[in-house]
Image 1 (cartoon, rainbow, N blue to C red):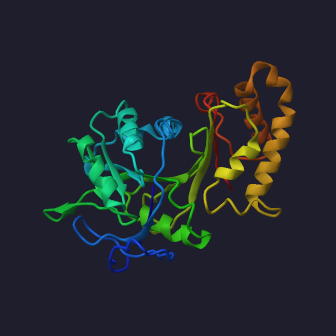
Image 2: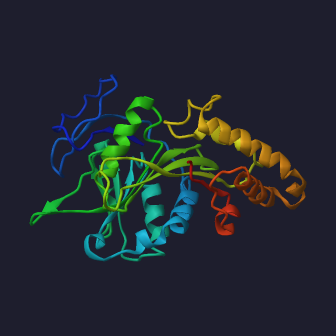
Image 3: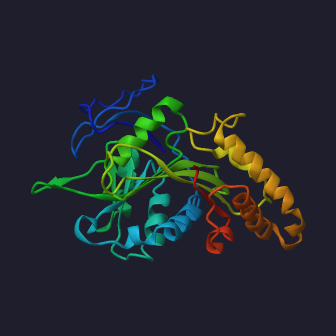
Amino acid sequence: MIAPTAAPTAAPAAAPTATSSAKQTLQGAHPVGARPPRGHVTRGKTAANRLRRIDVWTALYDPWLLRREDGPWSNAWVVDLGYGASAATTLETAARLRRLNPALRVMGVEIDRARVDAAQPFADAQTVFRHGGFALPLASAGGRTETVRLVRAMNVLRQYEEAEVEAAHAALIGQLLPGGLLIEGTSDPTGRHWVVNVLRRPVDGAPSHAPGREALIFGTNFADGFDPDRFKAVLPKDLIHRVVPGEPIHAFFEDWRAAWRDASPDSVWGPRFQFRHAAMGLGRRGHAITLRRAMLDRGLLVWRPA
């Protein structure tokens, strides 16, 4: 995966040297062909189907956003930011989401040029791989710049400081179409457990660079049982150090553990049944939980923090 560092307001910066190890600050946007943003290349490790359940959730959560082809949404990109050493996650996402929109265009973005070069044999008319970072490598022609409907940035921000997350979110949200989505978070190496922030660019009447969490999504495949505490290790960077008394995320986990215990009689029917009933218990405790069975039965819990 990559760790790109650019916000859309400052001037472009030179690419890092191979020996650079210092933490870089977020800097400016750049078009295709300009100097890349600073950042450090991460290990880039991934696995086939690691993000499959995130693709499933995305299709369930906002299918209209993926299907839209009106006005600026025509040919708008889905961007897989920081796809890593293998193009697998980008290609898998393209195949899954095109079940909703066969014309959907998908762009994989990496800060490591060698990874971009290695992915080129997999590119086609609807799938591209480009060199870039937080300043998305969008092409301009005839006075028009390419548009973006959704950005997914998985396992990208985890090595950054918490103080840098807000600027990273703002940089990406500012490049979305109004109403577009940013999906940012962390998964374990196999994708069994993951948590993502969902942020949406305001449609109108609000600053375009004003991030606000629309939802926090928890995903599991129940492969090795279930315990709410397993999600703590894969919380997004802005939350992972905040599971302490007095913080909303701490109170949420306390309530989830209690709801899971209360639903233990349902465990005879399996963890999915208990998971669904624990989600209902969270709702009774005052949390805004999406209770759609299509999500809960797939191990997908959508929480909308107050």
